[in-house]
Length: 267
Image (cartoon, rainbow, N blue to C red; front, side):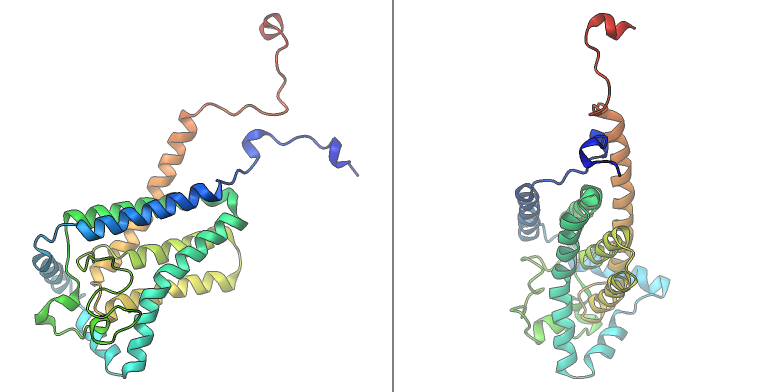
């Protein structure tokens, strides 16, 4: 058996490097601070008009299911409504944060590749929140949506968008609940072969897609935008990775011979 000390040293390019935990913590905390700042200060220009524009589009496409799902969900008692509110608020953070920690500690060689699309889709969503504020279905009085967040106080969410809204009730498009849930499923599917975990993360996406509509907090269009936004962010991150590898200098291999002199280098 080859002794460990006699084994060839791995090339620098193949050694996985983990970002310092404090740097990643600062990056995530800074991103959340920016998200909160944007949510608090984003313009409130014509949010009801923009919401009605989405409703008009959905009626044309015959996909305006918001009122039907909301009334079906809220007609089975307070307990189910509370469950929906808790799922909507808690799983929005618990699942993506758990997936992020899993990748960082157990699949660190893929961490930067997987973290990048999460940042991209979040930044893109904040830009849309700022440029095209959109009222959710629950804030359009003509729809008659039962506002589960405002009427059934859960986690201090009464009268607002809940704990996930910061102070902006008009950040409906796209749905970050769906984008982040889809990212978590993508991250887990990319880093493990466990059928159970893959199923649970895919199930979370489906349940979250139902919940965001049934609670009156998002349009069907928001859900579609969350899906497509995440996939577009993954594609963009791949292109950025290819561009970065072409631009940066090649790493020096630990086993590559080094010329001892100018004469040796010419040989």
